[in-house]
Picture 1: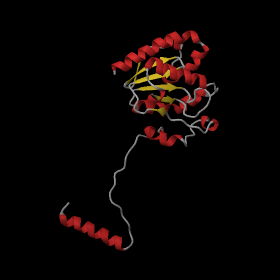
Picture 2 (picture 1 turned 180 degrees about the vertical axis):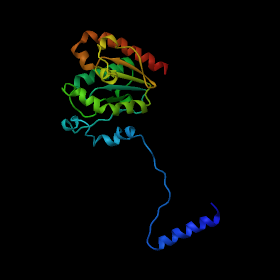
Picture 3 (picture 1 turned 60 degrees about the vertical axis):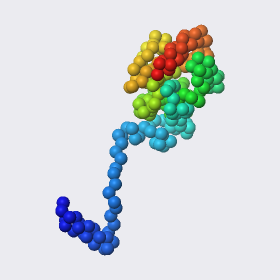
Picture 4 (picture 1 turned 30 degrees about the horizontal axis):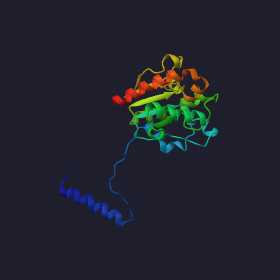
Length: 207
């Protein structure tokens, strides 16, 4: 385009402006993938993908240290008091990290009971949130607690057969262990979980 043509266009724009027309400066649109945009923390509070949103108004995207190298994953956000106390002791006594230094997330973001009969339906609707969280997380290790491994991988087997083993999850290492609430009901399995935690400790030291 010549300088003369540019001047003609500019003159025409100013002429239209004098008649009351408005125009704006060029701007760049930021394009986001639909799934990434929808399944983010900003949209969570208004999420109505499933009936879990009717059961609880409390939504939890994730808690703890976003920069942690270890992410712990549960099925639902809440722990009962005894389970939370055990979980804290597991972290501090074996992994030697305080609970506030890990990143804790759940597959289902609404604060409901894991015993809800519709849990599998809720997982299917909510799964996009945790998938995006894991992909974008700075964590190098993802530790699944209890049934969250089944939901994440659509695993139908017994957790006892794969607990403590490592699986590739995107660019991260995933390792399943028993949930603290399960250990409270089955204290004889605490020794196995202690061994699993020692494996996690070794993986953390190798990062």
